[in-house]
Image 1 (spheres, one colour):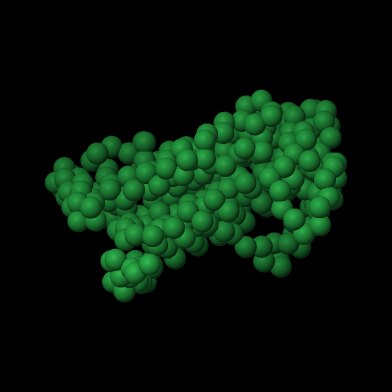
Image 2: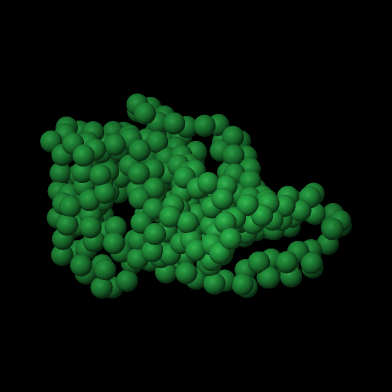
Length: 298
């Protein structure tokens, strides 16, 4: 199976090379989105990206009464597009098949069965790799996805694969925190979903989709309807935020959104540079699997 996978990926890369225009092997294509590339673009895209593909994962869910249902998807789409123009990588088309069971009670949520979500993510990564990419960078726009993504990546050690998956998780340095605090006007502790920060981000990226006059139509306050100390339960989010709104979007500003987005995109650009230059991860994966017994004893 592993040999077949590697041969398929090699065949695609070779076939693409054969149809590449002469003299263009090192020139990156104009476009970065997978679905906007042509077959003739493929070898140049693989070379320019150093076989690196961004998988931006959003979600479809209600974002309070005032920002679009696809806010998470819109943000990862924009972050990927803007970062990949500064540091070339191929961007996989819109992907919104994550974990969103906590929002099934509100309109617009798209929640697939858990087995489908897992199998689709695995098959997508396998298929990205079959097309010649051995580095897949997941960027995420939804707060309910990180646990799924981290566990998914850890399970890539279950069997040998000819690719590595990276999860981009931006940090917040002290300078950025000070700048954000100077612009932020609502309670930071309660600013989570469709609140000031996320609304500000959408005001900067897609102001045409934000309805600021609706931001106060529902409450985004924590309702504190369930309190069991030191215990996690699936219904916690609904118990606290039945309106699927956590924060005060009415306090959002485009200026704050610009700071948030420029900080994120800047860090993503640096991460892409590091991943493209990385030679250790795949090497260490191979070393690891060379040491894993093929038939471990019970």
